[in-house]
Amino acid sequence: MDADFYPPQSVARVKHVSADQTTAFLELRNGNIATCTTSEGFHFERGDIVFIDVDNNDISIAPDELWDEESWVGVVRLLPPGQVVIDIGGRLKVLDEPNVIDLREGNTVKGYESRGITEVISEDPVRYIDLPAVDSVTVEQFKASPDGALSFDDFGGYPEIIERAKELIEIPLERHEALTKIGARPIKGVLFTGPPGTGKTMLAKIIAHRADAEFYEISGPEVLSKWYGQSEELIRKIFEDAAAQERAIVFFDEMDSLASKRRDDSHEASRRIVGQLLSAMGGFTADTNVVVIATTNRPQDLDPALRRPGRFDWEINFPMPNMEDRRAILEVSARRLNKGEDLPHEEIAEKTSNWSPAELVAIWSEAALLAVMESRDAIFSDDYICGFERVAQHRKRTSVSGSGIGEE
Image (cartoon, rainbow, N blue to C red; front, side):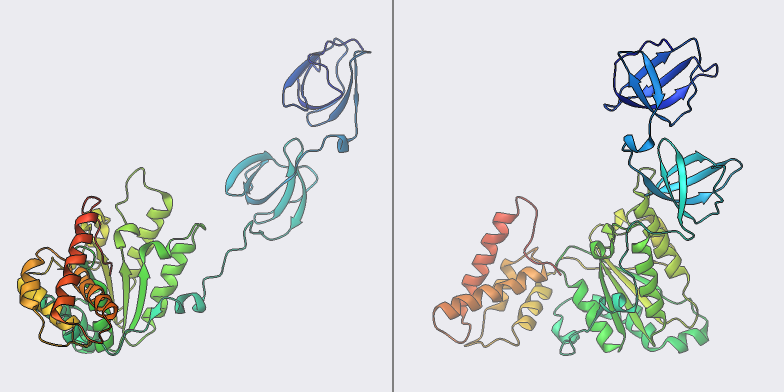
């Protein structure tokens, strides 16, 4: 047999043979494709491994073992006529149905790029990654035990916010049956909006303690999982567990990082999580005594579907504290401290316009350090004023980047 080869190689794999068997395309070891022609006709098929004898211009069949081809493993998803749709690590591939292997949907199969499916290695689908199970133990990790020593008296300032929170959260939890008898639409979701450090998380924990409610604390980034479907399963399990309690609060911090607006270019995982949240909140029955609280300082970024009736249709805004609020916060946060004399709360409150509660509380940490450095076991006015000055300097340094001291 006379043949022309380019470039010459010793072993190759047949990629294609023309219908008249006179032209063959061979895949070489380096990935290039060589063309081989003959007038006598080739007697091999696609996928065959061949020897190439360049000196004698000859091609002959070689053992398959000489071509070290990497196999793949996939799961049969569909069986359209004459074809097989395989899921290979999340990528779908359409192959010709093998003639000598019986397949059904869900089979785990082994195959090669050149030969297609070669064997069934399991009758059932096998996961490529053994995902951590989402079970009751996982859910327990999100249950927080609110500090029983805290009460509304420890909150400091914001009297209107406290009263509104009692109306929207505490009373519906404690008097759920009475509201049900009246036929009122239950309050399912309350959105806490406002800058970081304004006490949103603290107030939610105080309400949970007063109402004797199970408290699930979830940070937005904390519930996100890189595994497909696991984030939704975790959210579903948490809501199922909460619905089984006599009363419960499911608290989402940084909700905007978890359920932002769905757009055409949104990541698929984000779309699924928003859908799961909508489904979970929409699945509450009349007997479900659960209130969902979410915090965000960017309410405009939340998916609009979450703001519709029956979801987060109630909102409590936490602004920066005014003069009276700041004085109350300073007084309340100093109750458990050793103080050597009356402290100038009024003076500090006047100087801290636009400070968050977390920044105000940070003054006491600095004041305590100063007192200890001077070998005192109580905070005095000088410590207090110097503590304020240190925090003020820190605020000034960080204002360039727009960051504050405290987080909730």
